[in-house]
Amino acid sequence: MISFDAIIIGAGQAGPPLAGRLTAAGMKVALIERKLFGGTCVNTGCMPTKTLVASAYAIHTARRGNDYGFSLSGDLHVDMPRIRDRAQTITRDARSGVEAWLRGMNGCTVFKGHARFESPDSVRVGDDLLVAPKIFVNTGGRAAIPDFPGIETVPYLTNTTIVGLDYLPEHLIIVGGSYIGLEFAQMYRRFGAKVTVIEKGARLIGREDEDISEAVRDILQREGIMVRTGANCIRLSAHTDGVAVGVDCTEGEPDIIGSDVLLATGRRPNTDDLGLERAGVMLDKRGFIPVGDDLSTNIPGIWALGDCNGRGAFTHTAYNDFEIVAANLLDGANRKVSDRLTAYALYIDPPLGRVGMTETEARTSGRPLLVGTRPMTKVGRAREKGETQGFMKIIADAETQKILGAGILGSSGDEAIHGILDMMHAGIDYKTYQWAVPIHPTVSELIPTVLAEMKPVP
Image (cartoon, rainbow, N blue to C red; front, side):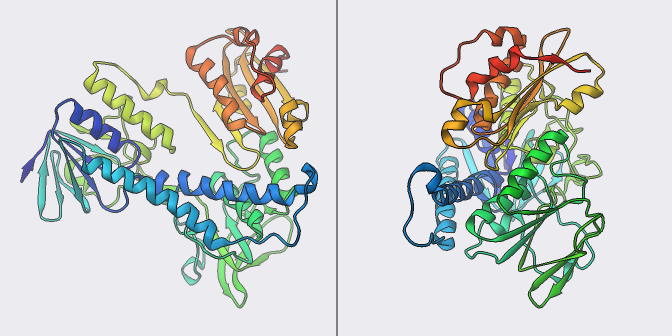
């Protein structure tokens, strides 16, 4: 039995920086990682996928040479092994950097292996029993595999396995029309594959407003991606040409034949094999660890951070979980998860940046609203770049004049959204932002213009 001041299970986005803060405060810390340092973001999420997105964007731009005044002689060759190797190199460098940082951290002992609780204050890793008054669970999540009929009879890809692909599928069928699925759809279409997206819901990315969903669908279809929505009965079976995916849609062929299938049907938390029941830690029906506003579980001395707590499924929310816990434990603060604004991006091209409420959500609140929109065709920077698809939308409370939410689907939308996010965080009314003087030529410079044209929602 080895005693510590704190045990951290998982080396994702919250675990390593928390170890850094705790050890700097003089604590003796054990950090346990059973597989890959860096978590989902570094290994199968943000870093490899956005590296692949960058390759796809470069290829797409090269194909559009005539639009920009140049031409390529001969056919454009896409080298999938080199694309894969580039992404894996960036991932490997980041992963090794996280591990080296932890192993060289004074006061931190790294254990490689599978952690299992034996009591509320003890965790076993192999032959070692670790004991501490504070335990932090940061075990992340993995792809959820739906129980579609026939799924056990065919090979399939997940977001984890597809980032290691070194060949180009002839026809990639993607089951799931949300963020992960759509990013891979556009990416592989630009690499040269035929791509079909199958979505059970009535439209793509159902959590977004209908106008944004339809605009995203139009962007993808213009690049030759086939989209099938309303697929109420999805089934899979082996086929001589690969995999047959059956769909029960209101229109279109009942079966789609593809060479490869990617399941992009959501995520599930890595909590089912931690022995949490021995510690008395509660799970909800989906396997997430319910936490309070300070990220504490139902058991004193145990906290849950990152994807496993169901309070955010992003790298930035996991890191903010670390910030909240560290501030409360070490700085005497009273930080709360409920103070965090919902913000995220969809990394198709052009990207969608989102913060706060959608218009649909704001309407259900019953408050009087103001809405402003502007198409990207009226944004000079977008026209100059030849990237004019999409639009901006901002929603505000008509009485308080506070911004409730915004979406920027368009060139640099993932960056421009931060000006609105910062205003919302500071609690500033939209008319204050209206008189800002942003730099020209940028996408952000049009935000005050949109705010000046806000109109009441009927």
